[in-house]
Image (cartoon, rainbow, N blue to C red):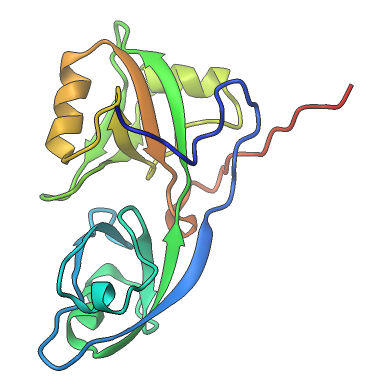
Length: 203
């Protein structure tokens, strides 16, 4: 079974609304690669798929982990420019966002989940590119104001399964009842109709 350490308890009606942002500085030695497998499917950020062995990130024990999003590198923010910077520059300052995860439970129903999904070839998530007006996710959103699934969020776990995008997609296609974990979109590409924080009122 997968785990979701940052997911709020199901009984809680408080939803985290801010990801952690920080700067990571890495210097490559001559001939050394950065050592990151990255997913650029959102066309803006680089999501870390894996920290590779023998790269500069691992050697310097840099504060990067799978699921982090590189938002900029030496000032470059467009995905293509950022990719070139990460490949060519020896000293790199990266603005990194570590998104939170949240869990929802839905049944597929007659209209399905109602999601258009995209993925990177070696990715470990499914990017929500569109939410259809009819479907289980839109129904969840209507009933759970402040806890909605948004465009640019990512499916990272399906019924306890984490792994390649193809494993997640297969589980979505072959099962009917779901416990889904989403990774919230980075602030830079987050839906402007942001989730609001709901807190229990003191009696």
